[in-house]
Image 1 (cartoon, rainbow, N blue to C red):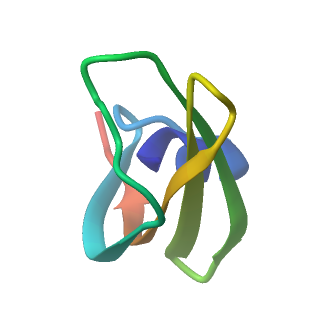
Image 2: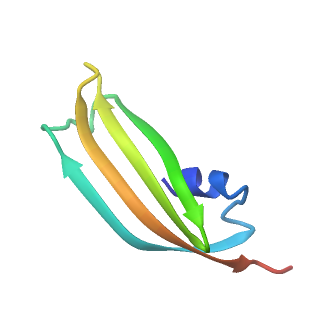
Image 3: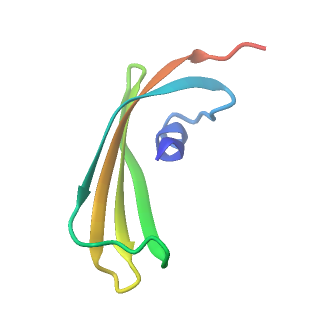
Amino acid sequence: MLEAALTKRRATSVTTFNALIDHALWFHRPIDLSDWVLSDQFSPSGIGGRGLATATIYNRAGQLVCIATQELYFGRPKSG
């Protein structure tokens, strides 16, 4: 989910320092991670050095199995 927040900021992990502040997972039904899953990720907010990223994860049958969130800190751009 970091990539979704970085894209919102038009940055990369190479150009910007970042750190995970908090994360949460909500499981809605059993998930088989040895099978195909779809993770739909987006970042609804990225203001003042902080970002929020969310992912909804679906199984092969299209059922929602998990929602995940991460709050991120973005420091100053890396120099040289």
